[in-house]
Image 1 (cartoon, rainbow, N blue to C red):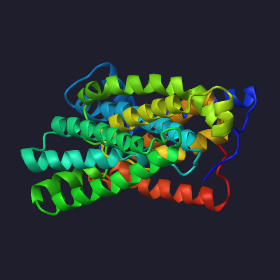
Image 2: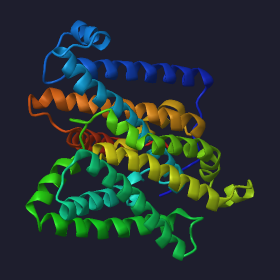
Image 3: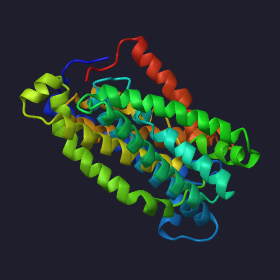
Image 4: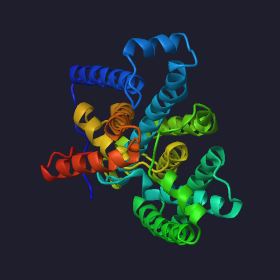
Length: 339
């Protein structure tokens, strides 16, 4: 499914969109710190931010600050990965999970729990990160056998096939062992609950490298939006562009999945919202997708806390409902912006 050349927006519209996005980040961050199953006055929250104590400070610094920081980071990573994925494939329905990253992470977690008989959060995080990156490398290797890396089609086909294979193996293992099934059920729904700022240290290097690659891929994405033949005519190396794009998607999605578990629809819908705000030029689209992704993920997490009471609804579940409805509405009414 291809699309038309990038939409353009005026400079004034771009600044207005940037201001609206910045305001949105501030609002959802404040809401994430202030709202939850434990009702706290906003003044008390900000007082404990400046002067931590064991009472309210334990809730603020032990729970809400980590999930706010990690939620914003994961949302931004998924938003960027989605924008790069859609730009690489020229497919507005493309999702970062298409390269088998989520399936690889899931299989690695299940194999680790099944063989090591441990549910350590740190071990699960590391297993998910290794599995996600390993799956993407396998997809690349399979696609390379056909010498078609200049085109996104072999990568997409390889990713779909390997994801299906990994999902089958994962299902077999979780149905064979109750302990593995229990650990997998907790991880696979996608959640920010119980996450620690220490988790950031494990994935920060991958996020930083992924951001560098995303910036390096921006020019190629604009060329690819015009078609492969035009991109070649402009002197673009399609193989290099694909490799950099694949590296960006892999690193950012792997880091996100490792921290929160699989979370869908952010990478799918955030670029569409961003494209409506700033147009299709990737120098604006990529950073705006990051901001929109952070807002969408944090807002969904706050909604899950408020509607679930003490038993919070995981952000992955909220996004599956809200994101699915929103995306169907976009497609149904023909409001999907052209790439």
